[in-house]
Image (cartoon, rainbow, N blue to C red; front, side):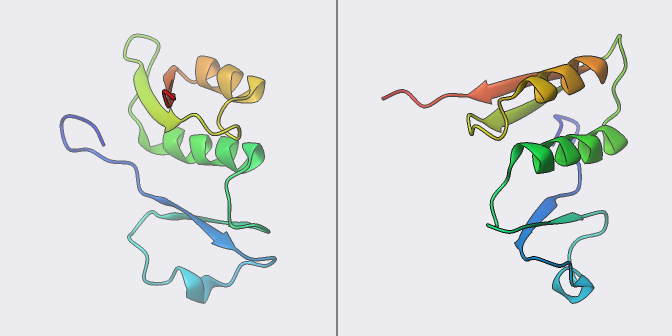
Length: 98
């Protein structure tokens, strides 16, 4: 969500082998349902999530947008960094201090 109250519709990760439209028929408009064998994010699904973000975010070379994520290994990959650079996204991961 931006400071102006604009938000990107949610991504829904469903633990399935095959997609069933009944699982997301009542989801908010614009939701992005994806399936994962484990029900967890992986680096390929994360790139798909970023593509969904790009469709909705108003970004340009002059007006970058920021995407904040946790420090999960599925979020921290070279393809993620390259995708963000190509699409004018400032990517920030949060780390946990121990």
